[in-house]
Image (tube, rainbow, N blue to C red):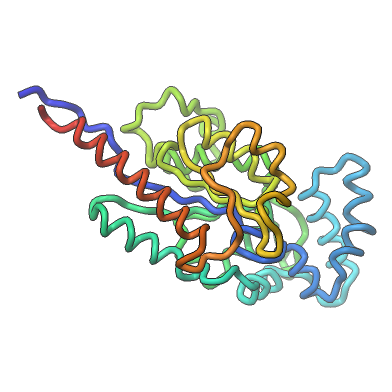
Length: 290
Ligand SMILES: [Mg+2]
């Protein structure tokens, strides 16, 4: 009997954006409100002028936040961001989605592992402190540095829209934190599937907007699945990113926010993970000794 090398990785990853994918409001706005600042005015007065001068949006946000902290008596600290995370309003039944997906996948195939990741363009100290944080294998986002008094004093990692894709490659290879330059430039296509923690065709990406378009693109390129989310108050036609997305059909579905069990979003997530699970089963059949 011919010995066939087993190459299937029986792992599926579901990757979420944070702001307006799991939360109803942008977490930076909630942070500003918690500091008694008006998000609209703060953006107009302090952030937009920097962007107009050529600043990258998240660097401008961090700079403006640090400046305002320095000018205030009550400094903005890691604790300030933690409190925002603890209290931020998540979409309905977000806390239940992880267990529901695990149960569904294990009822189909007990061998398949399902992991969750978060890749956010926002300040990751906020999602890290939400009640759902423990469900994620890893969370990546903008990082802030805090000085010896605890006050925010610099941005130590930014997360531009295209940079989010780097972390898709990281999770595919099973890298969580890395300062190794080689990890930044490794060529996904040249890696054998057996070397991957999760191949990108076994990834479901869930996001809501412009910051997710590069990830939608990478996922499509490598045969994974993507779900786009529009706000509960809107509809698919009103989704402002429709134009750029639909042309290349990058999404498996575009649905309203909210994770209730009978929602189209939750039904789409079930179908995506079931579909990938069946592909893995088929692959395992093929690889069995014939
Ligand atoms: Mg978002």
